[in-house]
Length: 119
Image 1: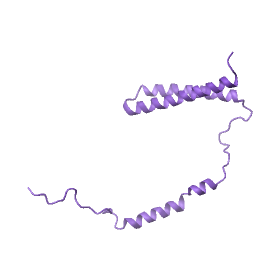
Image 2 (image 1 turned 30 degrees about the vertical axis):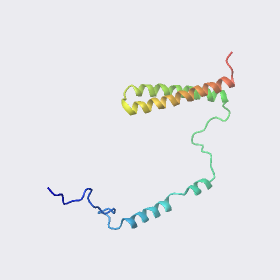
Image 3 (image 1 turned 60 degrees about the vertical axis):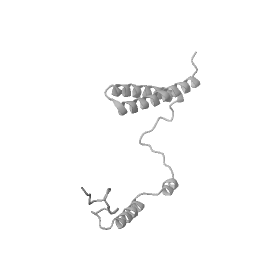
Image 4 (image 1 turned 90 degrees about the vertical axis):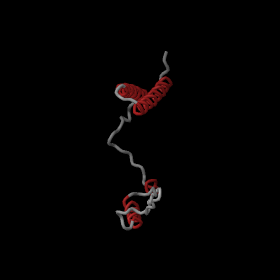
């Protein structure tokens, strides 16, 4: 049997639902340029310190590191509880996050040892 349609069929690269997709793309780029700041604009904007969440400036490095270690340990426990409910790629991704948390916790503990060496 002879096949009338070429394989793959000849198609027009422009969408059949949009009569002039080039003009639509230009309009979209213009809108993005108008509403979204450029990288140069972002870098030229001076950084302001956010006061929404602040850490007590009088807190010692040791107390901040202890808080960091405890927070990382809590995150590790939460991640391991979630891992038990997952399979496949999601489980592997969560275990990767757990390893990152563990490495951060080890690093923070090393800093604590340098601040106040164990006896």
